[in-house]
Length: 199
Image 1 (tube, helix red, strand yellow):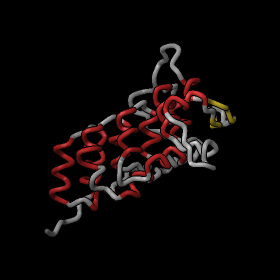
Image 2: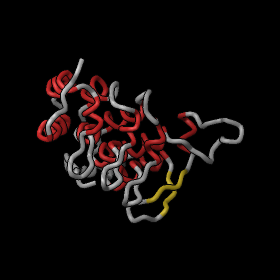
Image 3: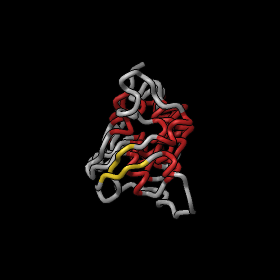
């Protein structure tokens, strides 16, 4: 089937549809224009369809529509601030979308957690900066622990993770030592705004 190219307005509309989680509009766009334009769609800050859906917690759109068809490279695509879709999920405390991005079988997996934005923060750093303890703990549990058990291939099991420490930059750019046990939530904290489109 031959598709015609979407207009600039239609490209802007697909980004808004992803931002608002409108599965029907995204599906209609794909039927009219194919999957290629989804990968090319960017706003003025370089944000992709994955940034929009991830920041706003639209798991159904990610898992059922976008992730099965977008190229693998889009998962690690960085906007003008160097942030990936996972950075935006972390900034907005969106655990389900963060998991969907990292667990995507066609994607880079846990390597997404290592990508740093222009501020020098990984998605884990963004989670910590946002005070999102559950997300930081989850990322610690799934990330590569390069200096633990690499020599003999013994990776720590879930129960052993509480005893593992790692170093990560804190919100001030200083290196801090942490463990999954240290990220346990001890009190309620106010979360970030529902849409952190500045990173």
